[in-house]
Image (cartoon, rainbow over all chains, first blue to last red; front, side, top):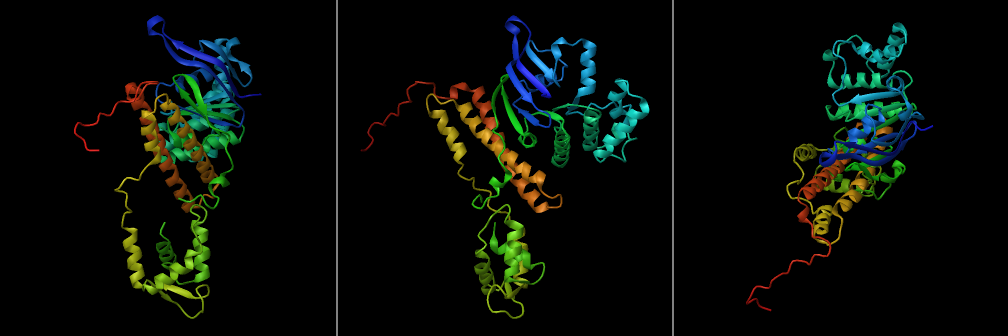
Length: 240
Length: 192
């Protein structure tokens, strides 16, 4: 079962003369365990693609499937539940709730989903510990560095039984060391079976992906070939 | 990469045999910059001739002979470390020339030319990133070398991105399909 599938998805905003085609006939499949980067300039439709994949917005036409489930047939509540259970979001500006501690932020989606407070907290602490934040569980977001806040956001995005991790410029606000740490965590989540989609204009960030899809003017214009083994770069003769 | 200075750096840690120099040189640089290991012995002989290293103990050939760095060698190494390499003169960049040429060739889809290169560069970056991901955490040398390569490739991609948006903003920059090439008028009175 694919973790995410977009079939001929188009998205139009406005009408008549003000009509803007944000996405045109986009099809994309992401398997569990794969990390796909969507690269494109500002206004190419990257973020629209992510919000549609995350069921935060509806496509004008086409079909979206998350964990095998068609979004079109779901009620508002069913979608909200799918988002809480199956989809994790990571944003450039972290989007943590300022009044909650790191552990409470991570536990929140589980509790909203009806999991008992103590069980949710236990899972949250384990997820934070996993990302090297075991000693930060009781800190509030403003007591954490940018890199730590983004790690909390990743913990919140992968806690529970998430199938799909959607990230919009997740390292945009971070320095290169923290950006690398964040991408290593995203990779690790994918190696654990989660499907990841990262939208970015940053080639360094995209280069962590198994596959890079290029978006131009709302349509997929190109994508990378499957990766050869790294040894091809380390062969004698490949010298500068 | 300067082989003489790499050898001086190895000897700054303490005296070493020729064979040892060769092995350490290979271990430290071989993975990312496969240089000619054969150069090691001839280079160390040259360093000895120039008084930057001296024999340490006995030993007949370069392989079994021990070497130590001299005071002059240490000075040379320190000076080299603080001397920036020549970055002032821009390299002759084939990609830049290619894009400039593409703008003049009728019927060429320049954004497509840019994308062919962007895809190739991103694929190279994916490969380097995978090497960094798989490397041992304490292999700082490899991580630094891979980072340098990633930043270099990224800068080329950023240039492609900015070239594309510049060309989109000024679509007339490109010669249209079928448009005649501008005529070069021969100045009157020019000599043949």
